[in-house]
Image (tube, rainbow over all chains, first blue to last red; front, side, top):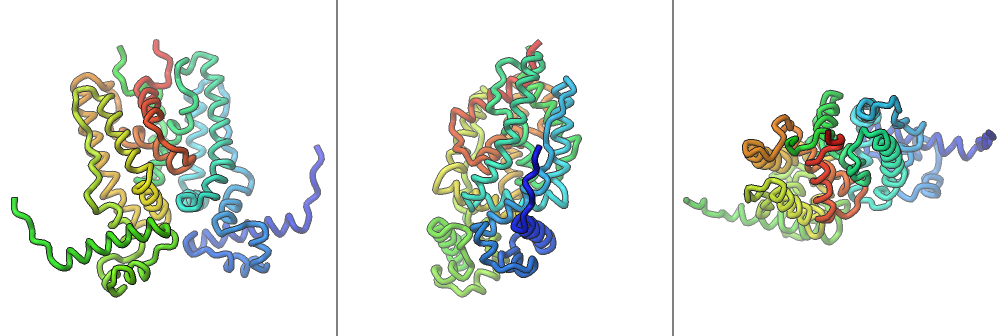
Length: 193
Length: 193
């Protein structure tokens, strides 16, 4: 495996991302500005605009670039246990400081910035969906998932309730809550015959 | 039933809300300002600040006040059909212009404005949850819902997947999609014995 050598431009990009996160954590996303990031990072604001077209684009890249959060699914052979492990991990990351409030601001920004929404989808939702479908496909082959379960719905059914709680009711999402949601999704709402 | 007579102040409040919605539809929430609303409504901006502490608070009140969207559940005796009807109605309202983009901006604002988040919860999520739980409680009494189904989860399980789709992947939520989600939630993910 050959590593591409890091250039000075890479280091500067990295420093601007890091500064963006630091500043967002200190003053909040609403008050964050490209001017503020440029001043603290010691670069001209045109250096920033050359790479990132808007504050939203810079922020998204800063939040999603550093060590891509490892949200892979384990495979112990027990799909319920593996979903539980992965979703506990995801809510620990997305639902709490330091990353939680940044992620929440990113979702907020995506509501009025279509370019940010598209990139959030491309860089976050779609890769997560692919992992989820892969893990569930295996479970289905092993008879742990209803054969008729519609895998296209997997991502929104499994993560929708947690997003709703984090973003709309804004209550904390505990591991216990995740477990209850999973149990309800697996059991279904219809009475068993 | 006695009607409280409308005062001139009520009319002015109503006019400011209406102007806020009009302007938000024309220029988008990001560019909306209290100054802009005041100018168009022909009032001083202090008149607005006296009643609404922030742009977010004004916007929330403007979006949620007019003829409260009627998102009641019908009761035909068939819980699945009634959920379908109500959720179709809700996504027609929340997922499309003219109301959809306003609602989406409101969710966006709630991600960095805790006062707006709290009021969104109080005026939108909680009343909807109460209606959902009431309809499902009746279904449970009639044997149409699994007796062990956890009603505290009903709101996030039923609406979470739709919010995830509207807010994160930002794909259109069709009636057919709603039906598939409901079918999956009722059937459950676990293989039937």
